[in-house]
Length: 515
Ligand code: XMP
Image (cartoon, rainbow, N blue to C red; front, top):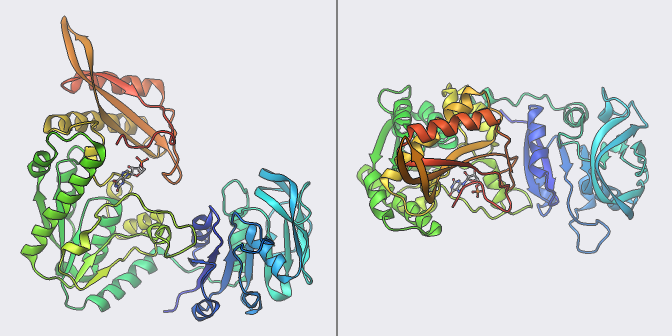
């Protein structure tokens, strides 16, 4: 079955991934490509529609990102957003100029042509998110202005005969009240997509493809218990059953009971047909970490030891045909393969793994999916909700939530404190609304009093943040009663902790984790 495709051409805009996600929310499959992508390649993909993103440049400057005029002559509907809209006008003979003031923030847009297919079912005025210095002062020949704002004569324009549409604001951000409606009007209305891209069809199709590719081959997967590797493992297990072996390395730096939970879900008592190997390597990691307090050194040791342990297990299994990686679409885009904004990935869960295993090919079954889609696929596959909606947990685990040297005793302290914190956050009904929250163990010891005794014990730091992309974050406002209850339980129930602090630092300047 050939699936419908809409292409997002990326001009370096900060919302490029969001555009693709919104299109997929309309149940239309969508991929992001750099503006450097060849026109021939785009023609080959035969998309039902093309969306040009925003970007930080001025389209009239000589070395700004641009595209061949032929793109607009393919007969494929094109929607330009912000920079994309300006570029469309610039290339097709309109005029774009620098404005005296930047138009920024929520803005009232007045629709001049309510019959425009983009504005079907949209109210006028409607609130839209603007962010631009340049503006379209004259539309290209054949275009008609369809909306304006107090400061901007062309908030939207169209040339329906050529199926070309331009929007100055950002319909993809949630601040644009009816943005999703406008995008769905474009992909479903103008492009005529059927909107039948759904998770059940993704799961079915992936299982079929995996079976075809793997045949009778052997498959190896490093399972961490995190969302991506769990969904990848279950997908593989549904496709090829016990041809799949999952190795789960318990490095002793997991949250309380987590190792057993992963084993319960994926081990012999669990619901899936696969070979599950749990490696209890806790003591090996503690020994390697003894006496080490420098954060990067700790990360390096944990990463390297992980590879050593995995390698030993892989050797026991022998040569395999395929190695599974839980790569997801943002990793593909951020590594510069998809769109334009090449962010260097700083976090690696299993960095270097492919080098140490004897395999022929890598399988990345989630390569096309965003995180929320991975979760949907997980639910579709029947994976328990507590695994599907688990919050992010760093590869080095509690190793980077214990400031300074890691010892088994400290791991117990932070595990117990964290379990209490998570329990109370859930009791307060906050577990779905706070982005990421956890307890960390500071390296500080201070004096306290318990009963009639003087204590000299550790301080736990509680962290809770809200974030959209984990690149920036704000401390979450956890209600005082909840913090109070957590604090009193931690100092009473966790040995060697006599003080609890709440970290309200945002990122930047802080990071989410402590090390
Ligand atoms: P920071 O501390 O950099 O964290 O603000 C941002 C997000 O990334 C997670 N994180 C990691 N994830 N391996 C991972 O897989 C790592 O080494 C790592 N370090 C941080 C962190 O939990 C947060 O969600």
